[in-house]
Image (cartoon, rainbow, N blue to C red; front, side):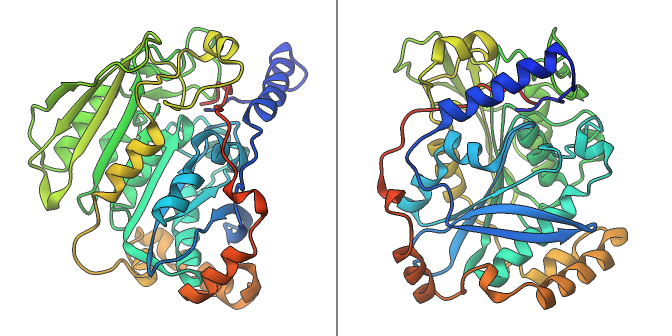
Length: 388
């Protein structure tokens, strides 16, 4: 969820107040991450929070991309992925975007205007995480919200050699990215979109809504996005449509569309949320009524975090392990030498203490040093930030 700060304006003051509100609402007694790692790409030092549970052999890796105007810390709180990772034994990475934004294909975000190569950053980041942790290369996944969700679609287009599955939430594919989306491999896709989203239009068009909040730029409709992924994966044209049970009378209902018969055991599943707004589904707020007025309803009839992880867990990449060398060699030619140079420089300059050891025994030792708050129960929360 993203916005562009316009200093010295009423808009700026409103956004600053929202940022304070985010911090208050999202505050919860939960261990956000037990590592911070850095990689250098395009001459910029980039940061990422990493949550590493007790290891049980090679672990899956989930990259969670924040919305525009958001932070890795708040995204960890909003999504609740750490608790699921502790239970299911996978690593969660929360990368940080430049100017709190991602170059998602619209060409309008702060990162895009600065010429940031976020795809190169993600490749370098995964390479570094795999260098220092025991990662199952067949189980690397990406998900994100709003600007982070739009960017997740782009990663599916450009890094299908790496990811087994992606999960964009309230973020359909950028209109400029769709025609040039030619994945080199099949990958499973799960998506969620609120039909009443006031900022990322369900029917497609200009992002930002009638108030023109955020970076703007055009996105495809939710249905065009799901049909695109179904076509790229060779799935059936007509999906199986199911109405999920309404467990909470919050004015929302969820329809699941499953495109089967896809190549390489992949699948495309989309959740359309009638009455759903610009929210991470399944995570309510203490100030729910106030936030609903700004962003629309967060459906309590589906839990995005649990649903996305269940989908990821069911889809591993077929064939050989995706090695760190392949992450570089499969990059587009103009980017390949720079990635190799940056990876070489990174490995030679970063101290080994910047991350933990690869072996499971070291991971167990690391777990014993965690904050006592790691096991505390997470209070309900979500973000009121209308960023895109």
